[in-house]
Amino acid sequence: MTLTHIHERVPAAERIAVRCVDSDIHPVPRRGELTQYIPEPWRSKFFLDHKVGELIYYDAPDYAHTFAMRADTFPPDGEFACSDPDMAFRQLIMQAGSDIAILEPGGRTPRLAEAHQAFSTALNHWQANHWLDSHNNWHERWRGSICAAIEDPEGAAREIETWAGHPYMAQILIKAEPRPSWGHPKYNPIWEAATKHDITVSCHLSRSNYEMLPTPPVGLPSYNHDFMVTYSLLAANQVMSLIFDGVFDRFPTLRIVFVEHAFTWILPLMWRMDALYEARKSRVEIKRKPSDYVKEHIKFTTQPLDYPEDKTELTRALEWMECDKILLFSSDYPHWTFDDPRWLVKHLPKAARDAVMYKNGIATYHLPETVPVLEGQTRVF
Image 1 (spheres, rainbow, N blue to C red):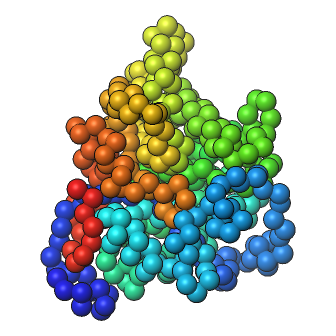
Image 2 (image 1 turned 45 degrees about the vertical axis):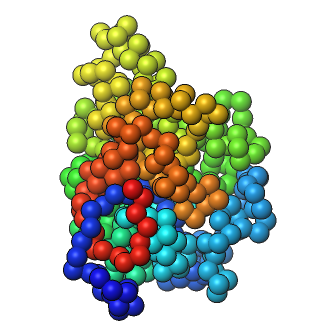
Image 3 (image 1 turned 90 degrees about the horizontal axis):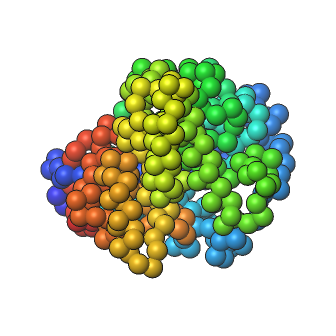
């Protein structure tokens, strides 16, 4: 193809094999862009007149200026990082080499279920009109998330029904903080809608007011670094609830992705769950080993990647947990914690490289195996 295709915003006829699926990037609306999509009465009575509560201290590099984003991801017009689809396309697709990227919008979600559902509705319309439309997704590289308020399972199911047929919506996006845990039958409408339409359910960690954070037994954390560790504990509890409360037996085709909750902890958790299962089979109403459920139904994104000084230790852990069955590549663009796919691929066991970088992503999100060629695009491998 020639660069004319890019300038005219039309995809090339020639296609190329997908070799990198990025399962976590964070688009942000421009100022005032989202408001029009928030349904009334919540737009006027809540979002236009709602004070932001105290947030946890975010001890990220240069947070006062870049808000934990890469400094080079802010567009020149003064808008926020990753608010310009064309700039994100140049940096993530053309330069870093991601072939398909999953959009995961969010922000500080409100505590009230109805307000959260209104916010989710707005995010879905915004994605469809500002990222997934023919002008901004002419290259067919963006895939969106059906945002849904898990606090309102019936409303979430309706939102899923509304967007399930959209050609570029690849997953359902919920959060893990609300109680009770996911094994509770109240969430069945969400799992039913997801399995009805064969759409993966993803959960991204969220950061909000203190009263909405996951609370460890010893109380709320003070800093971002210990807060981030608590999210692995939160995900571990949801994994146990999904398995031991029988969600995967009730919904045998359900697929779950934990985004940005880390993943190295899943190996000892599988060991522990399997040991308990073997010792108490007569009292546990599930049909097989817990680790089997994990490897069939649950995926984890690679970012944040925990790696020790001795890289062979990471390699052994990845092999022991059969990472080719449970990991999806993610970059976390545009955050300062961005993992370049060209860097991460070097840390994967060779036998698992293809599965983690693109095969698992294609299968999990029902993505095409080829995309239109882009002249000048970096290829990860």
